[in-house]
Image 1 (cartoon, helix red, strand yellow):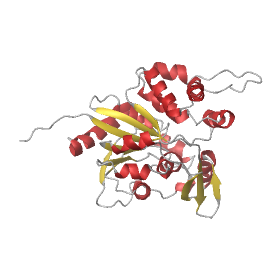
Image 2 (cartoon, helix red, strand yellow):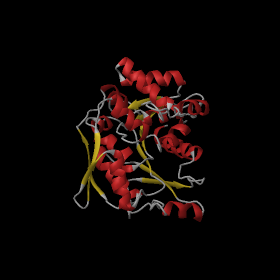
Image 3 (spheres, one colour):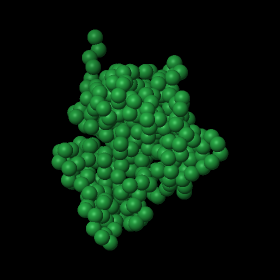
Image 4 (cartoon, helix red, strand yellow):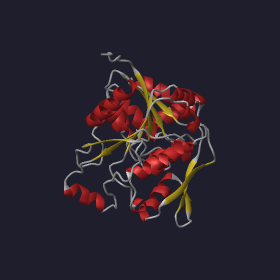
Length: 323
């Protein structure tokens, strides 16, 4: 019998700061995995949007959340850097998180956003790397099925929540992937996409010029972690299979595995989300070339993948395909 040879794997995890930590928080505990978070950079709301507009910096929020998840002491880092400055009269910085301000100041002082992110990673003792997909400014734009269009992450989400189905997505102005990030992606052993807001966290990453080419050079499997819920009335009838087809068009290569939740939580939890027009995401009609891994990944009252179960599923996939 041929022995299994254990080796360390470089895994790129693509997404934003809300869903991606479920993947990062699990994989960082695996000693055989080197985690590389590749993060969307087009947030236009909340503290990140204000800092982008007021200071002219790249939006720091999603980068910060991923770095905190990978921190040596995540609990302490989150307690300190997610605390908000008190509201003071005539204080432009009131209400911002300490971490967003720290990262923004580091970027402004050094003039290099990638270096600022790496400095924050070192400061937190992160078990893994965090990479912005680009260091150039851009805004998400969307066209809907009714012919209307809008711009800005918050506005795109709002249109979708009102019932407008997104038919086209692009960035203004066009921006390019950072060369260091492109080189890193080409050397990965595997890619994990999601979970996260499909049209404002996941797909915009692959609208960045050069990202598709970098993924083409990556020889390992592509795994998609499907969301637990649809995202408003504009995604009525949306399925995990539809998400896979959209992603395959965006990245220019097949998705090899999709992870889906097969067991929704108790009825009162679903009732609460149904009031927001969010419903469990069904698998749908998937092509025969994409492997399905299903299981109970939603355990609590909040729609969030369980880190330990997701880590176990991802490692099983990686071990079977790469070791």
